[in-house]
Amino acid sequence: MQTPLDSIPRSAPVRPSEKPVRRLHIGAMGPHSLANPALKRLIDPSWVHLGDTPEVGGRHARLRLKDALVARLRPLKYRLRGIEVPDLDAIRRRTEFRPFYYQIGDRLDFEDDAFGFVLSEHFFEHLFLDEAAALFAECHRVLRPGGVLRVSVPDADLRSYEAPEPVGYPSAREKWHEPDKHKTRWSVYSLTYVLRQVGFDARPVAWCDKFGKRHFSPPEPNAAAYRGVADPAFVFDLSCLKRGDRSLVVDAVKPVGGAPPVDAESAARRLHDFPTQQG
Image (cartoon, rainbow, N blue to C red; front, side, top):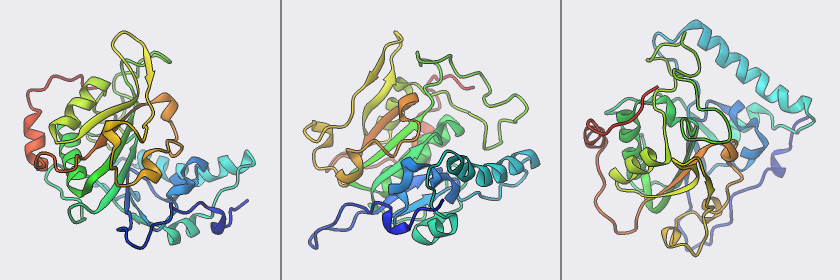
């Protein structure tokens, strides 16, 4: 079954006096990734999706085959469960996808203060720590003051709802330079530290602490950290997280009138002496 595009929720209406909100999705992996019913709100012209299956030099043939199978089978999985799925060609016509492969020194191809909201779910664990810091700094640059970067990653070591993530996940067969490899094992402590180093006000949303206690603190409009956010329609709605109930989730708010931003390469250099577990 295919869902008529007219039935897909649109973004919240914008009053004529307001600047339209643009949104950025990092690590999208093509239109098939939006087949998940939780992501219907992202099928909208206000979104730019980075991660449209890039051609990575030297990428193992097995990984390319895996990507192709996921793209074909993911929509089929939902249809077999009786869940309506938008046509993938229609998704591509409705919203923008761009290939994406990040290295330190790369600049996101957007002007400063371009977006009100940036979403990334289970992407930053695929970067080494210095690469993640550099990309966080770029997210800070392209966010408007009051903009929010919502980061969801595996709570690799501290999660109490399942066993810690195996070292070298997903497989020892995959080399450390390959995109599918999990290169950084995030905790609430390391993730909030890195985000604050590049100029964000980091606010944990879902996490486990070092004592094994699980916490959930959803964003609230009256909370000081969220006053004046640029995109309340998405900031105060967690329904677009596919794995939010089994992940570490942190909101990074770009302060209004805060400290000057840190450039990407400086952000990477700051962390050379920061201790973290790599796996």
